[in-house]
Each structure stands twice: as C-alpha cells, then as structure tokens.
Amino acid sequence: MEQVKFAETLKENNAKTAATFAVMMAMIFMITFIVTVFPIAPTLIILAAPAILMNLGWLVFARVV
Image (cartoon, rainbow, N blue to C red):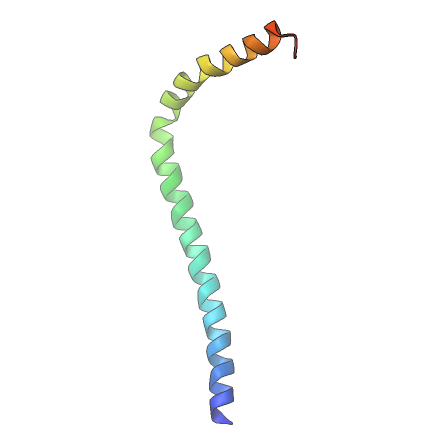
C-alpha cells in the first residue's frame, strides 16, 4: 500500500516540477531571444524593407492589390 502512495506522490510532484521547469525554460528563451534580436532588428528591417516594397510593387503591377 505504501508503494502506491509513493507512486501517486511522485506523480504529483513530478507534474508540478515539470510545469515549473517548462515555464522557467520559456522565460529564459524569451529573454534570450529579445536580448539577441534587439541589437540586429534595425539591420533586419533595413534588409527586409526593399524586398517587401519590391514584392508590393510587383503585386500592384500585376493588379492583384
């Protein structure tokens, strides 16, 4: 009987630990992503803007928009 109780307790504790771990990893990922992307965002915008404008130009030229 003690083994069943131990298994249930372990299951409950592991679920709580897994949820805490997942939330902590998500927070670390988001912080790292923001810190990494923030310095290169202006460069990405400068590189992406001409491509977006050209695509819009072709769509207007083809009378899709």
